[in-house]
Amino acid sequence: MRAIVVDQPGGPEVLRPTTLPDPVPGAGQVRIAVEVAAITFIDTQIRSGSSIGPRIEFPAVLGNGVGGYVDALGEDVDPAWKNTLVVTSTGGTGGYADQAVARVPDLHRVPDPLGAREAVTLLAEGRTAVGLNAAAKIEDGDVVVVTAAAGGVGGLLVQLAATAGARVIALAGSDSKVEHARALGADTGVNYRAPEWASALREAAPSGVDVVFDGVGGTTTDALHPLVRRGGRYVAHGAASGTWASPDEQATSRGITHIGLDAIGGTPGSLHDLVEEALALGSTKSLRPTIGQTYPLEAAARAHSDITARTVIGKTLLIP
Image (cartoon, rainbow, N blue to C red):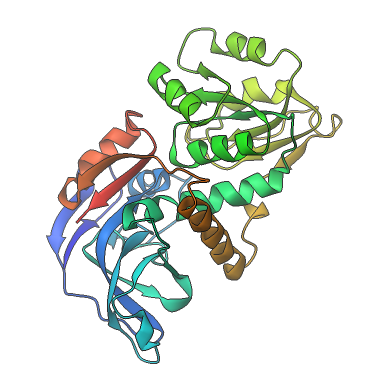
C-alpha cells in the first residue's frame, strides 16, 4: 500500500511517502480501501513532537480518521460489512495511507446523501462539536464566543450555537475567515490577528458573554476569561497556541464552570453515539461541514505546512 511514514519527530519534511505491505485485518477488524484521510491540527503536534499532542511510537503512519469502502474482513466479522461505505477512526495511527485497518465497533455507515469526504469531516470534529455543545448547555439568548471559528470544530460550533438561539461572536485569524464564520451563522466576528482585537471583542460584547469555546488557549484565553459572566461556561477544547487555557484567579468566585474534553465521550460507546449524531445532522443539512482544501496523499508535508502557517480554512483532507 501507499502510505506516509514519519521516522522521527520534526518539521513537515519528515513526512515521507513510501510503499508498505498491504495490511491484513485480524479478528473483529476490517480493511478499508481509503478514499479520503483526515488531517487534524493534533497530527501536526504529534509530528513535531510537541508535548501538547498524544505520544506515539516512531516510525509511524499518522492519521486517525478515514473513509472508504470495506474491501476485506477479518475473522468473525459480519459479511454484510463487505463493500459498505464507512468512516472510522483507526486507533490513533495508520490513516495516511490508501488502505487502513479498523475495528468493527469503530465503524460508521455513511448515511445518504453524504459522501466519504463530508462524513470524514464530521468524524472527529463532529463528535467534538456535538459533545461540547451539549456540555455547554447553550440557551436561547446566550452570548457565545467561538475561537478558531473558521476551523473544523469551530465552524460546527458556530452552527450549533446559532441553531440554539445564541448570539455568536466568531474569532478567527483573518478577515476572510471571519467572513466565512459569519456565513455559517455567526452574528459578528473579530480578527484576532488585528491590532487592538481585544478591544474590538469587548465592544462586541459590552455586557459580557455566557459561553466561550476556546480551541486556542495562550494569550487568547487571557483576553476571554474576564468577559465571562457570573455563572458562565468556559469550554477549553484545544491548544493551537501551544498552551492550554487555565482558569483566572476569580473564575471560581464568579461561578464560572470550566469544561474540558473529558466532559464528552466517557465511554467508547458514547463517543460512537456522538459521531452518529453528527452524521445524522450532516445528512439533513443541519450541520454543514466545510471542506476547505484537499491534497494528494503524497503532498501530506505541504498540507502540514499550510496548517501550521494558519493559511487553511475548515477541514483539510488527503486523497490517496
